Image 1 (cartoon, rainbow, N blue to C red):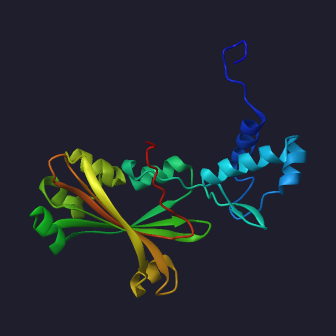
Image 2 (spheres, one colour):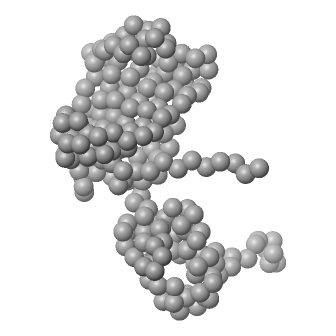
Image 3 (tube, rainbow, N blue to C red):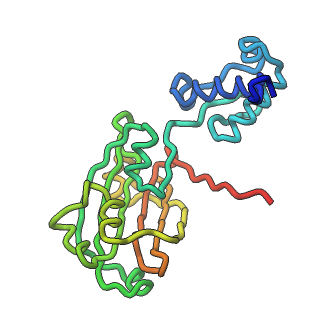
Length: 238
């Protein structure tokens, strides 16, 4: 430590911080190739070993990808999502310019959810997420129980335009849940909405959240552009 009691900021940490700032700010854009190790070492007056260590850390953070014999490329595109706060809030917090279009809000039935939760009817909320620079990036269908005041959603609409706020106002708070992730070929209808060829593979995530006593809060089925999204799970170390 130095005289102020702070841990000195080493060359490797400074290099990581500088490259991270360039990537997250967009100065180094997604798909752009980083300078070679020799160029980085010369520019920042560090050893090649320090450069390799810094690049390894950036790769661990999924900001870049390194191709053997080719170089390192930026993979970060600015979208970091925390689904626990709701999609709209997660997109807004990411600072990414994503618009949301409500496609439909209607009373529906679902045999699988009826069998699992002993509910007869549900409210289906369909929304499209669009990046103004590239077009639609995801479409989702949220299914929530048609109970109490929620049954009137098709007429009244969402509270503050938010599913999360609407569920909270109805006293439905997620205490547990599960998520399944796979791929799905786009149907003609989904392909038209997403402005993609029919049959193109998209990521499909199905997340079901329940209250502490096992009541349904929400089931969300999302189709996500695999070029824009990925799922990353972190496990604790023993």
